Image (cartoon, rainbow, N blue to C red; front, top):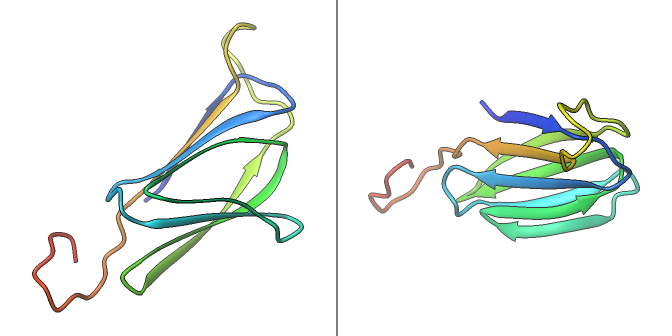
Length: 102
């Protein structure tokens, strides 16, 4: 199960996306289908509010997650920096080699 948490509010929001395995290919696409970020294991981006689609893949396994970056985020204080953290579970995949988690 993936987790999603947020705090703060602003027009640009810091988004941190990470996978448990640290080796998944991550790709983030905005509502206009433009790739706004790609990486291995982790992405750290400043995003404008809107809908995004995250693709996680490793060893032939793939998961897609829709992410909304809201225009206003609830906050515990004015000084809190806007931040969204998305933690992705490791994907299970078939492997002929004995790899832990496959």
